[in-house]
Image (cartoon, rainbow, N blue to C red; front, top):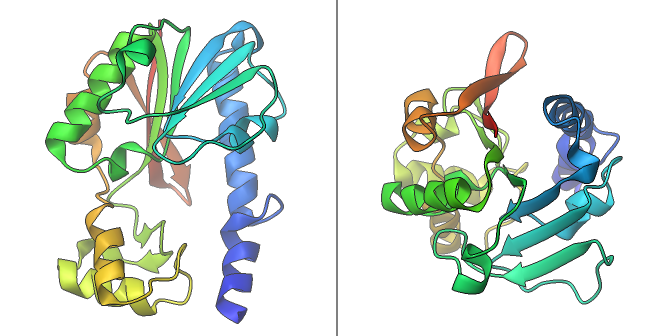
Length: 218
């Protein structure tokens, strides 16, 4: 499809504009945590591919996601199925150097669940890097739709159903509504509330804040 090709060229491919932005964010992570190669990292809500494609590999990465884990991963990566807001004790009891999370907290399902997510972050490691798209950036990042996040829920679902640059094609309006209800962008006050002792960094585009990153160096 032409729309999917456009999305791939704009954000999905490594050589796309979005791919270059992700590479710069990775460089920023390494600047903030220069000892990353010697660190044990738990990635809440991520995937192994993020780390296998990265230019620098931590000593060990433990990926926790609600999705089914891949069949094979490198020996320096462990992948578990689990809910980051209600971790099984065998994972919750672990200790790591760094908690990493990229574009996850806006999908966990409401304020109470975000509190549980933040508690997991604080419990698992003394340091963290938690990124989320900024609510008041003018383009909604999942659908690449200008102002979509400010519309009423049903209008957002209609846009999600029909917008050609959507990240996932919705089968019907109910499916689109499910995607919309599981996507709640956050602002600065919310991120400061969940991570009160952390530094809040702003990733900018054209002078506007595109995403927020809560950082604690331990």
